Amino acid sequence: MPEVLVDIAQSGVATVTLNREHRKNGITKVLVDQAIKAIAGLAADGACRVVVITGAGPAFCSGMDLSERIAPDEITFMRTVGQLCRLIHELPVPVIAKVRGAAIGYGANLALCADLVLADETVVFGEIFAERGLSIDGGGSWLVPRSVGLLRAKEIMFLACRVTAREAADMGLVNRCLVPAQLDSTVDDWAIRLASGPRRALSAIKQQLNGSFERSFGQAIEAEALGQSLAFRSRESREGAKAFFEKREPDFKSC
Image 1 (cartoon, one colour):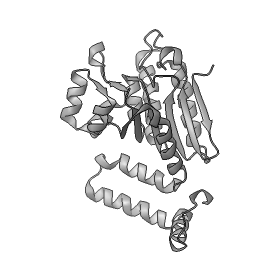
Image 2 (cartoon, helix red, strand yellow; image 1 turned 60 degrees about the vertical axis):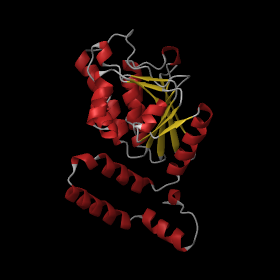
Image 3 (cartoon, one colour; image 1 turned 60 degrees about the horizontal axis):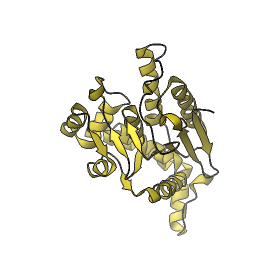
Image 4 (cartoon, one colour; image 1 turned 90 degrees about the vertical axis):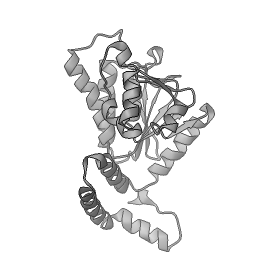
């Protein structure tokens, strides 16, 4: 069985599933290589309008599978798993993480690499690196402080905290904490709404927001001016304006 499954619906929603249920979707070199290939393929696929990342079975991802040998060496392996995080972060379409069960270590931060994180109330995000004598990976040193602030991030990382989904939602680490029965339907609703949206405009918005902490206010204004000037010339913009005057929903997929 492949360790990563990819399905693209006619709606433009692509679902990427980590498929090692017997190991709670623990990370291996094979899984990472397959995930990189899958995400890179979706980035080049014009039919893909939004990506949902999830795990098979009752867990999202239990982190690194320590029963597997790190190959070919530590630095190469960590750069490879880091490449997967960068691909998700830089993917030119919105990414939703659908999280249930355990999201531990790298698995927790892999979920946080997504643009939107929806978790059911059974989820625990385990930033347990210090407890294992390890440093941070999965982009957590960049993602967590930007979500909860530097002091709270240090508390979570220094004390190897296990953060419940409710706590994560309250502190802004994830978007929503949902009852398990609502997770699938809410993810589906958000994914369909995004897939029906303006693909090019959403890509520009994602790029601008991802770079917001590295820019001055003046640089942000200039980036917005450039992005909006290009947007005004796009078919999406013309369709949006036409739909407004015709009092109907825009059909951005036709663009």
